[in-house]
Length: 364
Image (cartoon, rainbow, N blue to C red; front, side):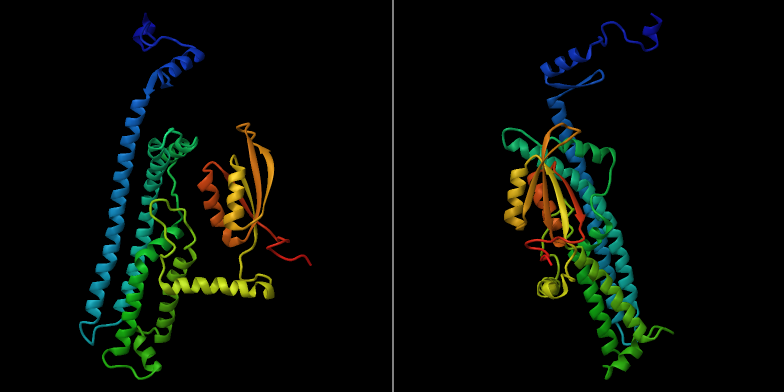
Protein backbone atom coordinates (compact mmCIF):
# COMPACT_ATOMS: atom_id res chain seq x y z
CA UNK A 1 0.00 0.00 0.00
CA UNK A 2 1.13 3.57 -0.69
CA UNK A 3 0.18 4.55 2.82
CA UNK A 4 2.58 1.91 4.12
CA UNK A 5 5.50 3.28 2.15
CA UNK A 6 5.07 6.90 3.19
CA UNK A 7 5.00 6.23 6.89
CA UNK A 8 1.49 5.03 7.69
CA UNK A 9 0.85 2.23 10.18
CA UNK A 10 1.78 -1.17 8.86
CA UNK A 11 -0.20 -4.13 9.96
CA UNK A 12 1.51 -5.95 12.81
CA UNK A 13 4.05 -3.22 13.51
CA UNK A 14 2.07 -0.95 15.86
CA UNK A 15 -1.35 -2.53 16.44
CA UNK A 16 -4.14 -0.08 17.18
CA UNK A 17 -5.44 -0.18 20.71
CA UNK A 18 -8.20 1.62 22.48
CA UNK A 19 -7.46 3.71 25.54
CA UNK A 20 -8.94 1.20 27.98
CA UNK A 21 -7.09 -1.71 26.36
CA UNK A 22 -3.85 0.23 26.34
CA UNK A 23 -4.20 1.20 29.99
CA UNK A 24 -5.04 -2.35 30.98
CA UNK A 25 -2.01 -3.70 29.15
CA UNK A 26 0.22 -1.10 30.82
CA UNK A 27 -1.10 -1.96 34.29
CA UNK A 28 -0.63 -5.68 33.76
CA UNK A 29 2.98 -5.29 32.67
CA UNK A 30 3.86 -2.62 35.22
CA UNK A 31 5.08 -0.05 32.70
CA UNK A 32 4.33 3.41 31.33
CA UNK A 33 2.78 4.01 27.93
CA UNK A 34 3.67 7.06 25.88
CA UNK A 35 2.41 6.82 22.30
CA UNK A 36 3.97 3.56 21.13
CA UNK A 37 6.72 3.43 23.78
CA UNK A 38 6.63 1.50 27.03
CA UNK A 39 8.91 2.32 29.98
CA UNK A 40 9.40 -0.45 32.51
CA UNK A 41 10.30 0.16 36.17
CA UNK A 42 13.89 -0.99 35.63
CA UNK A 43 14.36 1.46 32.77
CA UNK A 44 12.87 4.25 34.89
CA UNK A 45 15.27 3.53 37.78
CA UNK A 46 18.23 3.47 35.39
CA UNK A 47 17.19 6.81 33.92
CA UNK A 48 16.85 8.30 37.41
CA UNK A 49 20.34 7.10 38.36
CA UNK A 50 21.86 8.69 35.25
CA UNK A 51 19.93 11.91 35.86
CA UNK A 52 21.18 11.98 39.45
CA UNK A 53 24.78 11.47 38.33
CA UNK A 54 24.41 14.21 35.73
CA UNK A 55 23.05 16.69 38.28
CA UNK A 56 25.84 15.76 40.71
CA UNK A 57 28.40 16.55 38.01
CA UNK A 58 26.76 19.90 37.31
CA UNK A 59 26.65 20.80 41.00
CA UNK A 60 30.30 19.83 41.49
CA UNK A 61 31.32 21.96 38.49
CA UNK A 62 29.59 25.05 39.84
CA UNK A 63 30.88 24.36 43.33
CA UNK A 64 34.41 24.39 41.94
CA UNK A 65 33.66 27.72 40.28
CA UNK A 66 32.48 29.11 43.62
CA UNK A 67 35.76 28.13 45.25
CA UNK A 68 37.70 29.63 42.35
CA UNK A 69 36.02 33.03 42.83
CA UNK A 70 36.85 33.00 46.53
CA UNK A 71 40.45 32.13 45.69
CA UNK A 72 40.60 35.11 43.32
CA UNK A 73 39.45 37.40 46.13
CA UNK A 74 41.98 35.99 48.61
CA UNK A 75 44.92 36.18 46.18
CA UNK A 76 43.97 39.72 45.11
CA UNK A 77 43.74 40.84 48.73
CA UNK A 78 47.09 39.30 49.61
CA UNK A 79 48.79 40.91 46.63
CA UNK A 80 47.30 44.34 47.32
CA UNK A 81 48.27 44.31 50.98
CA UNK A 82 51.81 43.18 50.15
CA UNK A 83 52.17 46.08 47.73
CA UNK A 84 50.56 48.63 50.09
CA UNK A 85 52.86 47.78 52.99
CA UNK A 86 55.99 47.20 50.88
CA UNK A 87 57.14 50.76 51.41
CA UNK A 88 56.19 53.96 53.19
CA UNK A 89 55.56 55.75 49.89
CA UNK A 90 53.14 53.13 48.59
CA UNK A 91 49.70 54.71 48.06
CA UNK A 92 46.95 53.74 50.47
CA UNK A 93 44.16 53.98 47.89
CA UNK A 94 45.23 50.60 46.47
CA UNK A 95 43.34 49.05 49.40
CA UNK A 96 39.95 50.72 48.65
CA UNK A 97 40.38 49.79 45.00
CA UNK A 98 40.96 46.19 46.08
CA UNK A 99 37.79 46.33 48.18
CA UNK A 100 35.81 47.37 45.11
CA UNK A 101 37.37 44.54 43.11
CA UNK A 102 36.58 42.01 45.86
CA UNK A 103 32.97 43.21 45.91
CA UNK A 104 32.83 42.50 42.17
CA UNK A 105 34.07 38.97 42.90
CA UNK A 106 31.29 38.69 45.48
CA UNK A 107 28.62 39.54 42.90
CA UNK A 108 30.09 37.03 40.46
CA UNK A 109 30.14 34.36 43.17
CA UNK A 110 26.54 35.12 44.15
CA UNK A 111 25.44 34.60 40.56
CA UNK A 112 27.32 31.31 40.41
CA UNK A 113 25.83 30.29 43.74
CA UNK A 114 22.31 30.68 42.30
CA UNK A 115 23.20 28.26 39.50
CA UNK A 116 24.73 25.86 42.02
CA UNK A 117 21.54 25.98 44.09
CA UNK A 118 19.44 25.10 41.03
CA UNK A 119 21.31 21.83 40.52
CA UNK A 120 21.38 21.20 44.27
CA UNK A 121 17.60 21.61 44.45
CA UNK A 122 17.12 18.80 41.94
CA UNK A 123 19.66 16.60 43.70
CA UNK A 124 18.01 17.06 47.08
CA UNK A 125 14.61 16.39 45.52
CA UNK A 126 15.79 13.03 44.18
CA UNK A 127 17.61 12.17 47.39
CA UNK A 128 14.74 12.97 49.76
CA UNK A 129 11.79 11.84 47.66
CA UNK A 130 13.22 8.93 45.64
CA UNK A 131 16.35 7.38 47.12
CA UNK A 132 15.48 7.99 50.77
CA UNK A 133 12.07 6.36 50.37
CA UNK A 134 13.70 3.32 48.76
CA UNK A 135 15.51 2.75 52.07
CA UNK A 136 12.35 2.89 54.17
CA UNK A 137 9.65 0.39 53.17
CA UNK A 138 7.06 0.76 51.87
CA UNK A 139 8.34 2.79 48.95
CA UNK A 140 5.98 5.78 49.12
CA UNK A 141 7.38 9.10 47.90
CA UNK A 142 5.13 12.14 47.94
CA UNK A 143 2.77 12.54 45.02
CA UNK A 144 4.14 15.85 43.75
CA UNK A 145 7.89 15.24 43.79
CA UNK A 146 8.11 14.05 40.18
CA UNK A 147 6.01 17.01 39.05
CA UNK A 148 8.33 19.46 40.82
CA UNK A 149 11.37 17.78 39.28
CA UNK A 150 9.79 17.83 35.80
CA UNK A 151 8.89 21.51 36.18
CA UNK A 152 12.47 22.32 37.14
CA UNK A 153 13.74 20.45 34.07
CA UNK A 154 11.22 22.00 31.67
CA UNK A 155 11.28 25.53 33.10
CA UNK A 156 14.56 26.07 34.99
CA UNK A 157 14.30 28.90 37.51
CA UNK A 158 16.61 30.05 40.26
CA UNK A 159 15.52 28.71 43.63
CA UNK A 160 16.95 31.63 45.62
CA UNK A 161 17.12 35.39 45.10
CA UNK A 162 20.27 37.34 44.36
CA UNK A 163 20.03 38.99 47.78
CA UNK A 164 19.97 35.66 49.60
CA UNK A 165 22.93 34.46 47.55
CA UNK A 166 24.86 37.68 48.26
CA UNK A 167 24.12 37.50 51.97
CA UNK A 168 25.08 33.86 52.35
CA UNK A 169 28.34 34.09 50.40
CA UNK A 170 29.24 37.28 52.27
CA UNK A 171 28.67 35.63 55.64
CA UNK A 172 30.51 32.48 54.68
CA UNK A 173 33.64 34.01 53.16
CA UNK A 174 33.73 37.65 52.23
CA UNK A 175 32.97 39.29 55.57
CA UNK A 176 36.43 38.26 56.76
CA UNK A 177 38.09 39.69 53.65
CA UNK A 178 36.24 43.00 54.01
CA UNK A 179 37.27 43.26 57.67
CA UNK A 180 40.93 42.56 56.86
CA UNK A 181 40.94 45.19 54.10
CA UNK A 182 39.26 47.82 56.30
CA UNK A 183 41.66 47.26 59.19
CA UNK A 184 44.67 47.26 56.87
CA UNK A 185 43.55 50.55 55.26
CA UNK A 186 43.22 52.26 58.65
CA UNK A 187 46.62 50.94 59.75
CA UNK A 188 48.25 52.05 56.51
CA UNK A 189 47.01 55.62 56.95
CA UNK A 190 47.65 55.77 60.68
CA UNK A 191 51.17 54.28 60.73
CA UNK A 192 52.91 55.18 57.46
CA UNK A 193 55.05 57.09 56.84
CA UNK A 194 54.85 58.13 60.52
CA UNK A 195 52.15 57.56 63.17
CA UNK A 196 49.39 60.20 63.07
CA UNK A 197 48.89 62.47 66.06
CA UNK A 198 45.38 63.82 65.49
CA UNK A 199 42.18 62.93 63.66
CA UNK A 200 42.66 65.88 61.30
CA UNK A 201 45.99 64.48 60.23
CA UNK A 202 44.33 61.10 59.63
CA UNK A 203 41.69 62.69 57.38
CA UNK A 204 44.35 64.64 55.50
CA UNK A 205 46.25 61.43 54.72
CA UNK A 206 43.02 59.68 53.69
CA UNK A 207 42.48 62.13 50.82
CA UNK A 208 42.65 60.70 47.29
CA UNK A 209 43.65 63.36 44.78
CA UNK A 210 41.09 66.21 44.91
CA UNK A 211 38.67 64.16 47.06
CA UNK A 212 38.86 65.24 50.73
CA UNK A 213 39.80 62.64 53.30
CA UNK A 214 36.55 62.85 55.25
CA UNK A 215 34.60 62.10 52.04
CA UNK A 216 36.79 59.06 51.36
CA UNK A 217 36.27 57.80 54.91
CA UNK A 218 32.50 58.37 54.72
CA UNK A 219 32.19 56.55 51.40
CA UNK A 220 34.26 53.66 52.75
CA UNK A 221 32.11 53.34 55.85
CA UNK A 222 28.87 53.39 53.83
CA UNK A 223 30.26 50.95 51.27
CA UNK A 224 31.21 48.39 53.92
CA UNK A 225 28.03 49.02 55.93
CA UNK A 226 25.94 48.15 52.87
CA UNK A 227 27.43 44.67 52.54
CA UNK A 228 27.30 43.98 56.27
CA UNK A 229 23.65 45.08 56.29
CA UNK A 230 22.90 42.68 53.42
CA UNK A 231 24.58 39.87 55.35
CA UNK A 232 22.59 40.67 58.47
CA UNK A 233 19.18 41.26 56.90
CA UNK A 234 19.29 38.10 54.76
CA UNK A 235 20.22 35.83 57.65
CA UNK A 236 16.62 34.63 58.01
CA UNK A 237 16.29 33.61 54.34
CA UNK A 238 16.58 29.83 54.11
CA UNK A 239 15.33 28.90 50.65
CA UNK A 240 18.65 27.33 49.72
CA UNK A 241 18.62 23.52 49.82
CA UNK A 242 22.15 22.68 48.69
CA UNK A 243 23.98 23.38 51.93
CA UNK A 244 23.58 22.74 55.63
CA UNK A 245 22.13 26.00 56.91
CA UNK A 246 23.32 27.18 60.28
CA UNK A 247 22.29 30.11 62.38
CA UNK A 248 25.90 30.72 63.42
CA UNK A 249 26.98 32.09 60.05
CA UNK A 250 27.78 35.59 61.26
CA UNK A 251 30.44 36.91 63.53
CA UNK A 252 29.77 37.26 67.24
CA UNK A 253 29.00 41.00 66.94
CA UNK A 254 26.22 40.18 64.48
CA UNK A 255 24.64 37.70 66.88
CA UNK A 256 24.93 40.28 69.64
CA UNK A 257 23.19 42.89 67.48
CA UNK A 258 20.39 40.42 66.71
CA UNK A 259 19.87 39.62 70.39
CA UNK A 260 19.91 43.28 71.37
CA UNK A 261 17.40 44.04 68.63
CA UNK A 262 14.98 41.38 69.87
CA UNK A 263 15.39 42.60 73.46
CA UNK A 264 14.77 46.21 72.46
CA UNK A 265 11.65 45.22 70.53
CA UNK A 266 10.23 43.42 73.57
CA UNK A 267 10.99 46.35 75.91
CA UNK A 268 9.50 48.97 73.59
CA UNK A 269 6.49 46.97 72.41
CA UNK A 270 4.10 48.25 75.07
CA UNK A 271 5.33 51.85 75.10
CA UNK A 272 5.45 52.55 71.35
CA UNK A 273 2.89 50.06 70.05
CA UNK A 274 5.34 47.61 68.54
CA UNK A 275 7.13 50.17 66.39
CA UNK A 276 10.32 48.09 66.27
CA UNK A 277 8.49 44.90 65.32
CA UNK A 278 7.31 43.89 61.88
CA UNK A 279 3.62 44.09 61.07
CA UNK A 280 1.49 41.20 62.28
CA UNK A 281 0.31 38.83 59.55
CA UNK A 282 -2.51 36.37 58.90
CA UNK A 283 -1.59 33.02 57.40
CA UNK A 284 -3.86 30.57 55.58
CA UNK A 285 -2.56 27.00 55.53
CA UNK A 286 -4.40 24.58 53.23
CA UNK A 287 -3.30 21.02 53.96
CA UNK A 288 -4.39 17.39 54.09
CA UNK A 289 -2.64 17.00 57.45
CA UNK A 290 -4.56 19.61 59.38
CA UNK A 291 -4.28 18.00 62.80
CA UNK A 292 -0.51 17.45 62.60
CA UNK A 293 0.20 20.94 61.27
CA UNK A 294 -2.08 22.59 63.84
CA UNK A 295 -0.47 20.71 66.72
CA UNK A 296 3.01 21.69 65.54
CA UNK A 297 2.01 25.36 65.27
CA UNK A 298 0.50 25.32 68.76
CA UNK A 299 3.53 23.67 70.36
CA UNK A 300 6.46 25.17 68.45
CA UNK A 301 5.23 28.64 67.51
CA UNK A 302 2.88 29.17 70.43
CA UNK A 303 0.19 30.61 68.18
CA UNK A 304 -3.51 29.79 68.19
CA UNK A 305 -5.04 28.00 65.22
CA UNK A 306 -8.57 28.09 63.82
CA UNK A 307 -9.51 25.19 61.53
CA UNK A 308 -12.08 25.36 58.73
CA UNK A 309 -13.20 22.63 56.38
CA UNK A 310 -12.45 23.14 52.70
CA UNK A 311 -12.47 21.26 49.43
CA UNK A 312 -9.97 21.50 46.58
CA UNK A 313 -12.04 22.13 43.47
CA UNK A 314 -9.23 20.94 41.19
CA UNK A 315 -8.62 17.63 42.95
CA UNK A 316 -12.00 17.21 44.63
CA UNK A 317 -10.31 16.25 47.89
CA UNK A 318 -11.18 17.53 51.34
CA UNK A 319 -8.70 19.93 52.88
CA UNK A 320 -8.22 21.62 56.22
CA UNK A 321 -7.92 25.40 56.08
CA UNK A 322 -5.97 26.69 59.08
CA UNK A 323 -6.06 30.37 60.04
CA UNK A 324 -3.05 31.52 62.07
CA UNK A 325 -2.24 35.03 63.26
CA UNK A 326 1.54 35.43 63.57
CA UNK A 327 4.14 38.10 64.18
CA UNK A 328 6.14 39.22 61.16
CA UNK A 329 9.31 37.51 62.31
CA UNK A 330 7.52 34.14 62.54
CA UNK A 331 6.64 33.89 58.84
CA UNK A 332 9.76 31.96 57.83
CA UNK A 333 9.44 29.63 60.83
CA UNK A 334 5.82 28.92 59.91
CA UNK A 335 6.70 28.06 56.31
CA UNK A 336 9.51 25.72 57.34
CA UNK A 337 7.29 24.06 59.94
CA UNK A 338 4.39 23.48 57.54
CA UNK A 339 6.46 22.13 54.66
CA UNK A 340 8.39 19.85 56.97
CA UNK A 341 5.10 18.06 57.68
CA UNK A 342 3.27 18.43 54.36
CA UNK A 343 5.26 19.24 51.21
CA UNK A 344 2.01 19.62 49.26
CA UNK A 345 0.55 22.25 51.58
CA UNK A 346 -0.53 25.65 50.24
CA UNK A 347 0.44 28.64 52.40
CA UNK A 348 -0.81 32.20 51.93
CA UNK A 349 0.52 34.95 54.22
CA UNK A 350 -1.13 38.37 54.18
CA UNK A 351 -0.13 41.54 56.06
CA UNK A 352 -2.79 42.90 58.40
CA UNK A 353 -3.66 46.36 59.63
CA UNK A 354 -4.02 45.08 63.19
CA UNK A 355 -4.52 41.85 65.11
CA UNK A 356 -6.48 42.38 68.31
CA UNK A 357 -6.56 39.64 70.91
CA UNK A 358 -4.48 37.60 73.28
CA UNK A 359 -0.79 37.68 72.40
CA UNK A 360 -1.25 40.67 70.10
CA UNK A 361 -2.72 44.16 70.49
CA UNK A 362 -5.00 44.63 73.48
CA UNK A 363 -8.54 45.85 72.70
CA UNK A 364 -9.07 49.54 73.39
